[in-house]
Image (cartoon, rainbow, N blue to C red; front, side, top):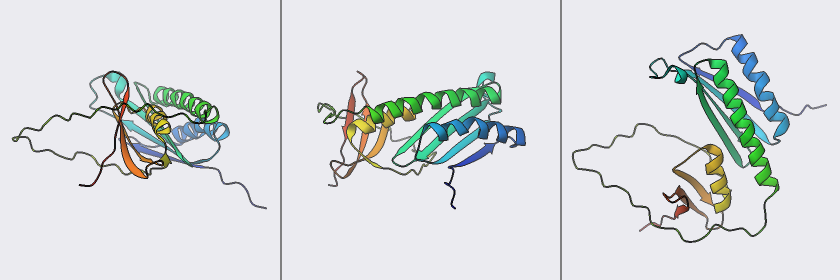
Amino acid sequence: MEKNLEPQVMIHTRNMQLTDAIETYVTKKTAKFIRHLPGIDEIRVDLDHVRTARNVADRNVAQITIHGKKFLLRAEERAEDLYAAIDATIDKMDRQIRRFKGKRYDKRAGETVSEGFADLNEPELEEEEAPVVARRKAFTIYPMNELEAIEQMKLLGHENFFVFYNAETSKINVLYKRRNGSYGIIDPEIG
């Protein structure tokens, strides 16, 4: 008789030691995500102690990323106490899961994003400045339409832009939020 495999909970720490008490606390708190959201492949919890933070309330950082079939949810919070940061992140992720499930199950067929997108004006770099790539990220993208991309952008907490594979055009697109609160899409073409 085979058991259903539980999603793996991976805990990563930085500038701190992972104690049994912290591991037990995180595992116990993240167990409710597995019960409430089917289809989770992996739960990653990143804990960091930032010694150089200016504000004491920002010293402990907890970030939770949930990978699943065709979804990715992320929440991050900071607090003076590590357990408070974990609890705040758990609460934030719980709200995102409820919102995600509501949007996923209450979708209306035929909805499309309005088509009046303006061009993105990028500031020109001065010649003296030497641009530096400070960070690189790799992530898995899933085919989605424009409405799903807007929802993912909100769920991940990205305020400026979101890169996604547009299932309707079979292209990589960049969704961005405009100053007036509407959204724009960059649809690149090779010249």
